[in-house]
Figure 1 (cartoon, rainbow, N blue to C red):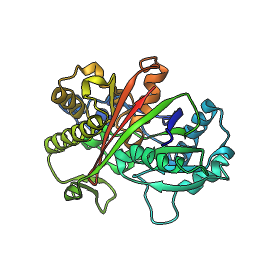
Figure 2 (cartoon, rainbow, N blue to C red; figure 1 turned 90 degrees about the horizontal axis):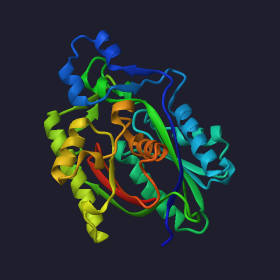
Figure 3 (cartoon, helix red, strand yellow; figure 1 turned 135 degrees about the horizontal axis):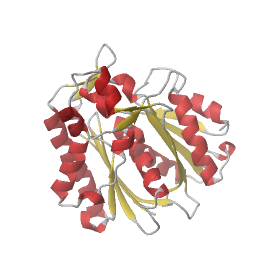
Length: 313
């Protein structure tokens, strides 16, 4: 089979960042204990003109420029989004038109925080067909519009977008070695969006943390076993943002040092489907991720999906 490579990445964060002091001043009921549990110092909050397509296009243009690829050269465009889902029309065709990617077919994907890895798997399948050589994955979410103002979730979530140019005939970038996709439909009612439009969790946060970590470990272990590897054989793990508690519990469960878990959660918040590509770009740009590194991406999505992706740089 042909390899999929992420040849470039691009991100977009809203113009306005909301720090903890601002949130606590507006909602005094949020205390220091809440701040510590969540582990976020600042998060982006999109203005009305920074809608999902706007953020997607800005992230996509950065990725395309870095890859030296024109929008007209794209064969497909996959938009991952959970926060502004609607029946018709999909948002992906609007992004396609705004980019000028006239040759590309385009459609939306869901899967919440697991959506980016699901999109990589879909793209990998398309790239096995000689008709398709290059595509674009974009994750863009207004997550803060789906959390109740003044709630603990308002400390956690941030808005933002990330894009990845993927191709089968390039030599640079992250090579997708393997991926793992799993679903536990018995957990499909764990969370939902209520009639008021806000995210509702139907179990205690501790239960969510424990389920998330066991699911992340399950996905990673299955993938690594297939490659005859273990967790100690990867240089870094890049999980979807989750919470600071989930990441800490993941490191403890795997008996790994904290520095092996790469996250930019404190500075951007949980940007859901954009979490993994945003972190990848951040740590490539600051020099942490370099040629030769093996990286395990892990995520869970409300549904309940659990996924993993192994890449080499």
